[in-house]
Image: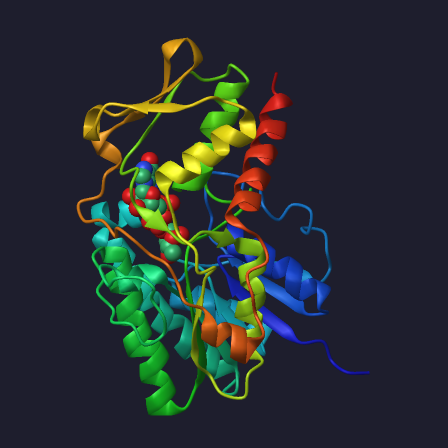
Length: 342
Ligand code: F7E
């Protein structure tokens, strides 16, 4: 009988980790997931899989070499997916050292321990569209990197030093996905899309009166996370390691996202005022959206829109969910969730 393939996923408890684990288990993999100890329920997104015998969870941390060593020696993976990171761009301005420690040095620790266990291991590194920073859209694999946050700087350094660097110096199989924003009902609530869908669902149900946002005019290329993890897997099945942009090719503003979610929830919305005084108003002149300086970033990436032609032609990957479908899926999930608390 053919042996089952073994995958090792860091960041298994996050949005992408949970979707990827489900996808790989369906494909017949044994999956080892590395998770950090936190005070919150770490199994929130993976509780339906927690009893699956193909999934093995181990405590560990990209800042702790011995924990990586132990977990990797046990897993002996054919494929490693590095999805663990300090992923909140706003927070990275406040914690630049921690960001560098995890998003830069952590990548090297993981790669070096993984190749000790299996020299032929195939490694996926989660790179990010934030690395393009101020470069004008559309952005693809040949675009110039111009990061503006500690998060993006650390990811770009990891890409240059450990993805391209180790690939060229030592011939390791390390692929990287330059993923544009990808969302789902499992998205963390501090990211703007989920913050909007949770807040509006609560407003619709009378559980909340209003909420505050930062820059309404930032534009992002938002896709569906469950669809994006399939590209990660496809990258590790290629003959040679390479880098791929994964995106929908369509961008929308934060304002568009609010309007689409309001449409979905049947909340009439009009905008009044300008810049920090702008507000979103509904029936009865009730203010439901305000602007708060706190949610502006010290430096902003104004517009991202990816060109995923290479992923389409070489991986056979394509975006499967439209912006409108994504907003609908997320608002409906939050509405159903909060209805239960009534
Ligand atoms: O912000 C603006 C904010 O925090 C999107 C991460 O997964 O995708 C994500 O990074 C935009 C920004 O995601 C609020 O200024 C306005 O322009 O949802 P976000 P992000 O920074 O694009 C990339 C690809 C990653 O790799 C990252 O790890 O929305 N914005 N008002 C706001 N953002 C937040 N969070 N909260 C607000 O109230």
